[in-house]
Structure formats: structure tokens, C-alpha cells
Length: 70
Image 1 (cartoon, helix red, strand yellow):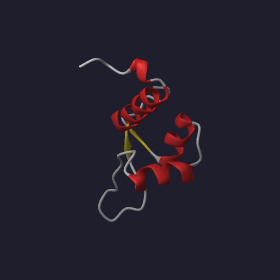
Image 2 (cartoon, helix red, strand yellow):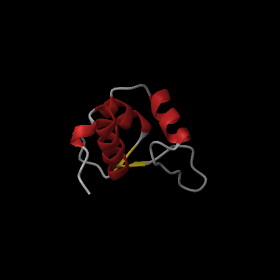
Image 3 (cartoon, helix red, strand yellow):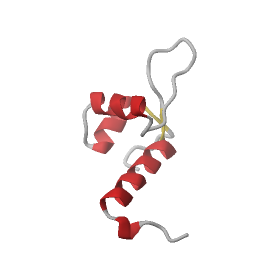
């Protein structure tokens, strides 16, 4: 990853995905990007692994021939 962090905020995730913060919120609310909020906090936290998983899924959607064989 470009950032050396295990947990990203929405702005960092947006930068890495090349989309707006609003786009990240849409991905979170649609269930396509896993994220969480700490109790009594406003900000979303996006685990690095969640972002990697989303990007891998998008690459597979764009090019099915790259899907791992099971």
C-alpha cells in the first residue's frame, strides 16, 4: 500500500481508490467496502485489508481471467 497504516480514514481510502470521499461513503453504505465506527465516534475506520479486498474484487470484475482458480 502507499500508506503505511493498518487503518485508514475515508479521505485516505478515497485517495488510494481515486474517488471522492462521498464515493467511499457510498461504498461503505452499499456494503462493498467494510468499515466500522468506534463507539460514540463519527469517523469511519477502514482496515487496510478491507481496502485490499475491495480492490482485488474490482480487478476481478474488470478482468475475470485474473480470478484465482479454485
